[in-house]
Image (cartoon, rainbow, N blue to C red):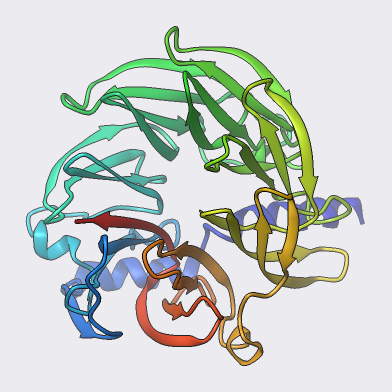
Length: 389
């Protein structure tokens, strides 16, 4: 019984990334023998002229299938562009790579963190044309500060074991030269990071060390680029975001058994844990004074998923909605995965990863939760990157 429980835990950690061996072999065989799909366009939605010109959407793709793709939606033409990278970069043999884990814009460039390909892909923000890459093993998330990029790295191989030995780190590289000039060791399997003032906050997950998860946020001094201390929060941390009031919001995935996913609040002025909110979080977006969350929380206790579309007030730390979608619309989505709220219109964008092995769907909802439009995406649509004018 103990062995079975451990096996289930391991399966849970990997289910997001891995595909059945047979499926991977089929996909890889197909990619070797047929031409890879090029860019497709589709008219969807209505033309909008606001401060947000459009957004990129990074599709993760399953590990081992080399199917991470990049889409773009243009509000000014109401056009969805699928898989733009091959068209912009016809000479890049392996295309974007294996498992897209984060996407951010900085200056005139676009940075895609490609986890299993161990690189940050750097592109022109306007065209998607490849500029170069920065090699970082098992990289996860990226943020920027004064001309430098900071990237979390698991450092070691993709491996599930209680006795994982390799601590992670944050890599720093110059965005002008794309040269790494520093590394700061943090906890095990660091995920998202946030920069507030002169400090970097890193959510350590320990996700490979089931059931011995990490439970801290590392605090790094930007000037010395050294870890100064850690803040104990909760096990298996993932996201860390700052709101406009200067608070840090940190999400825990829990252990999928007796410790549920929750949201925590840290005061960066004191680096003290100040509150927690009982809401499960797989992904989130902060817009104004609201945190929009989507969650598919799996439980091994009853072997089921609990789906939540929540809104948390950043001022009161209260859950103001546990389902911001109209009832009939919440039934359309199988596996909610990515979320973004357009600050110009308050429209809510949600992605559906479905079975994690087939093309997903992007939904656009009004602020009231009514469906405006939907469109097909790549496999496991996940990370939004809005582009201003």
